[in-house]
Length: 273
Ligand SMILES: [Zn+2]
Image (cartoon, rainbow, N blue to C red; front, side, top):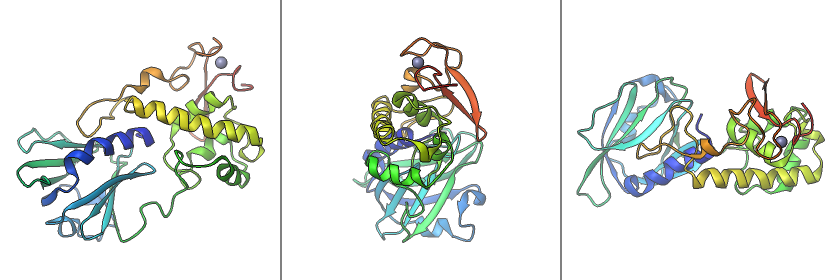
């Protein structure tokens, strides 16, 4: 599932092409990808310009020139790409926005496809795109995270996946950050020591920054707005590396299942296993 680095990479590739463009026509092929169900997305979007594109958590947030907003969530397998109008439409394309570029002299299409349909288009109107979410990991302070972790006795791995506690992290980057910080994934969140939380915050930022520099991880479906895959999957240290040697100490990486999610860690570097 695309996490913060992948979603930010999509946003970075969309901005130069889509910002300022006017939505000339909306082709919506499946009504059930739109939330809330009663919103007339086609009318709301047609003839409006896209003023801003940004990321909040794992959401790609669009602000229109009338200040209404909507966001697209890529779910498990979603792709949001810029195509030329003549390009073949791939299967499971649910939405096409026909755009006139900001300079007014070109036509492009912003296409959303999602075979597994865990993603979708969410109309916000004037609502805050992150009102129901925790703070952003790139700017969170250790004190802030420590206060949040104090309030939960879940495993640290499970707590960090909770978008209300901290926004934008998923399975890959939580496993990678816990390994970088040397923290056992089944440690109770409220029992982390202050220096562990400090190390964790530094590790989260470091791992996300490295992933961003490599344009995210492509395990199966992820591509950026230009249709290009990321490269960070080659640099994972624990995620999807069960039984391979830890790159710090050589011990075999272990895979366990926590809260129905696979979890990878080094039993030596991360305490116990
Ligand atoms: Zn190790």
